[in-house]
Image 1 (tube, rainbow, N blue to C red):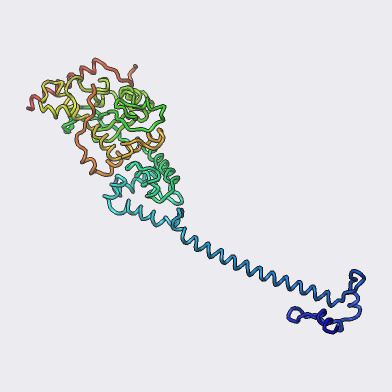
Image 2 (cartoon, rainbow, N blue to C red):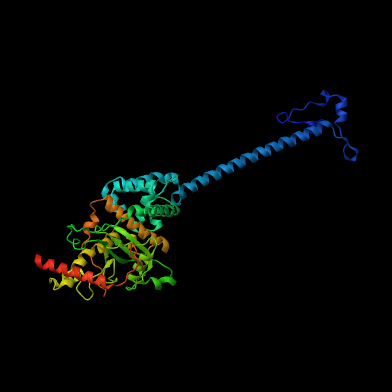
Length: 445
């Protein structure tokens, strides 16, 4: 009986320390003794001890649970670190901050290494590139962004024109996103086209005292004009209209240049199937089109009408340089001599086409841009052509261009010529000019 009482009322001291019934008053004992079921009474010592034991047990369970949870979390974290350490090098990630050193290095190689590298990649010297960036920023309205300077924007644009690279290739070289490449390409294109009045040259008539052997006989001439085909990518339903006589899908571009191969005027956008004379007529009738002052003229081939303001050769007579080089016989009459001199002078427009297409690869193959953007790119290439010839007196690419030839193809008073029609007066003037050339040539032999 004594052992049983001890076991029922014993509480380990290591868990909780509770005063016994002798230390408490009788009133406290009576208030703390609730009635039990079946009329039995439970002592206050038993109830307090049981509550304390349950509380301590819950604390121990919580502690063990926290320990297990922390151990599980540490194991999960360690496994995740080991897994990430083996997978991160193989994942494609984009970090702008990590790409900055590579971007700086690539731009340094393009424009800071030497002139040869800059010309090979951007088609102009380092000084010319720097001045172009300055003009585009201060005149064209091109502005730098938070992450891309004007120089890098212009380098992206020139790389696309010079090498005709796709967006995904350019973004790999410059370490930029495809959206960034496309955005800055169009921004530079817009800024450059604003400079057309600055880069297009004004025609200067040939003076009477001109000593240029090719041009001295054409007093009052402003230059030469011709059309050329530029490959184009159009929708399937429009290919028939853009297919030229060679069977290629292209646009017919009218270009006018002076005696120094600088472009005076360009008209882009006509379908490849359009005749050269039709394109020229449209250029004259436009409000801001080609202006030919009275008394001046341009040299053109036999595909155009010999009318006021446009001097074409005699048809059915030897004309092209290929024919003269093949036969190696001197002119036999005034018409042949006129055609030979005319072809030698008018060849300047053919050489300008060869130089233009040789410098900008985007003009030699189908572009990846919409038709409107492609036509704007053609104009941009011509503007850059004039700028490079102005800033770089010695052009290595020009030295490689040899004599080229095109294909053999058989109102009230106005200050400017507004139509191209044959006239007897213009034909007689051409006849007298040919006779004068022939007489001078016979005397000089």
